[in-house]
Image (tube, rainbow, N blue to C red; front, top):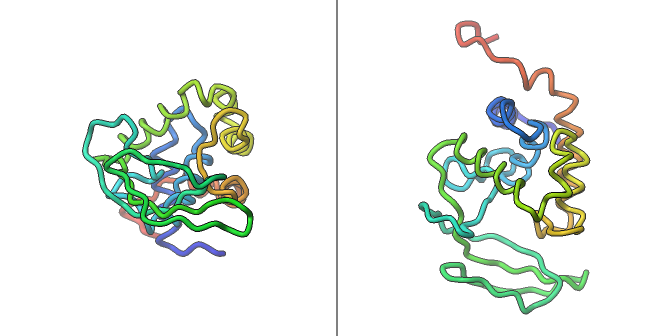
Length: 182
């Protein structure tokens, strides 16, 4: 799928905001694209990773989402609520859930929180690879400790986006001259 101008503007915005961070901007950008459908489905204006409430004490946004599990006994704490469960042909269960997601006032706040999540001990085997986008993606999804996402296709989708963006990295780094829109 070729990205359109709006999608590439989203990718560039995320990439450039992530350039000063601790995790390679290709990984951060690919994950933001995967989580939002190229920016079409952000939670609030700035939650570009679908980060759920967890222990967050700040404001939240309630959003309907899908989660995937190996059994049908998963529970969620209020205010999250299971709307329906469907057994898939793969034997896994797809849950449709109304969940509380963190509300960020700025993109920088979201990026800082995103980084802090990967600094948790559950990702200590992944953290050393934070500047190797493909290996970092593999490590956060390899189920050695805790998977980042429940979707069974998460790694393959993330890998594909990292490769695609890698071919456009020089452009992603360039800052547009506002006086010369060419």
